Length: 113
Length: 110
Image (cartoon, rainbow over all chains, first blue to last red; front, side, top):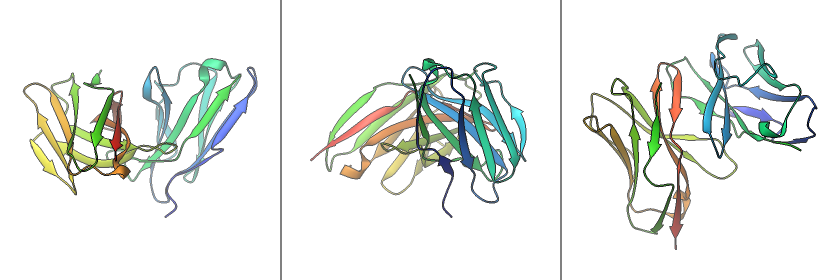
């Protein structure tokens, strides 16, 4: 298996622009997680999907952030409008079920200028 | 909520020596703990886990020790190799939710 796939790997955008990050989980995994990693706050869970349904979005910073999972093999995290403080590495992870080992993708490094 | 902290942000170790990374957690009800390794430009990778009904677990060159009395766990890496250079995170898992510590950067000196 190719593991969790994320795109793009790097994104540089200007403040106010819309940013869409993409994730393809491992085939057969029914749980998907979006994390954000910064120097100040470390790794934080943003949102958790189970069977394509958002279960816990309490980590989403504000309404500018939204996530979708239209099917079992694809998820997006959108930031609109983006701000410089959104600069971070965003990771997608998937697991077979909610309580199983989470496999992380390579991350998307987002820079908002 | 869970608070997870690491004792040292950096660790420099001579190749061939043993490494010890320490971590503390706050919630005495936590029962599942995981160590992750994150190499530059990559996502965290599972190394080893331990449940609260154990106090020691060994893998290949790695050992995790859990002291529930003082809410402390450690990761020991035997015969540290250059490929062990990375950031190491401890994490506490409650149901689906992972709470990560800040990370210890391990640098292996040749």
